[in-house]
Amino acid sequence: MSGFDVGASVRVRLAYPTGHCRTPFYCRGKTGVVERVCGAFRNPETLAYGQDGEPQLTLYRVRFAANDLWADGEPGVAVEIELYEPWLESA
Amino acid sequence: MSTDHHHHDHDHEHIDHPDTDAGPWSEHRYIEGALRELLIEKGVVTAEEMRAQVERMEGRNPGLGARVVARAWTDPDYKARLLEDANAAVDELGIEIQPTHLIALENTPEEHNVVVCTLCSCYPRNLLGLPPDWYKARAYRSRVVREPRAVLREFGTELPDSTRIRVHDSTADMRYVVLPRRPEDTEGMSEEELAALVGRDAMIGVSVVTKD
Image (cartoon, rainbow over all chains, first blue to last red; front, side):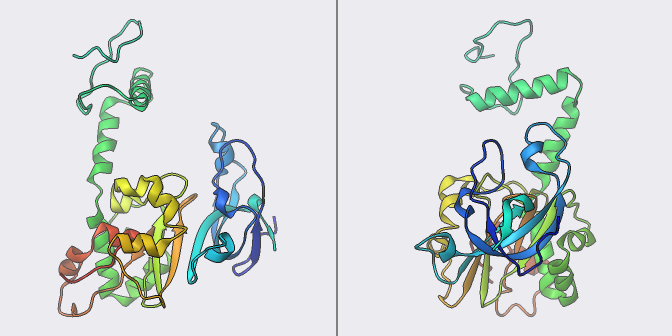
């Protein structure tokens, strides 16, 4: 996978798959900026079901302005969330 | 022993483990008890290994994090290393941090950091010990991402409007510790004296460190 660089604008997929995942509902479909690349980690969506979590996925920290998450988001507030690469697309 | 949780028939008796509170068992307590007994009966872990792990985790406490903060306040090079690679910096002080992937976040007059896990209760236990109950409560988890200034105010933490707030949702593999601002008029204090000022909540980011 080509991956995203720090500073890249990314959108979280607006998807509602069944089963375990680590993507909070409140950021789905929202656009933010890559704050750092955390490295490769085992996939929690398969680890949760007794599998080995391979292949590993790149984990990003994405920064969202609060008012991009919520209509009444507070000015001067950012929320940073760890998201795995398959949940992100270029924005 | 009480029998109020024995609704089923089988060929061995449950015991009330010595760390079990009196009173009726909750559903989760049943699950934990059953899992614990099975792991031991099947030889996956021994009772001694389980006890030792509980002792090890309960031996962790915010004093470990406070040592890291005090060192960062008194040694600018250490602070730089902590912000660059928190695992390595914590290792330097002889604090066992693996397998945690730690990120340290510096509070400044311009920017305040606060940590939450909206999905569950992810917390840097190796550095701070067990999380407080409020950290696991739905109210904190749902509100601090949405209205952090109000939540901080309820914790007694008033920040100027000009201070930006970064809320860190530990949703996956990383864990976070906040490096609070060093209080004024502490230039003459030793590293140990400084560490004594640093509380758990300041390292989560819901409070600030004061001299008194």
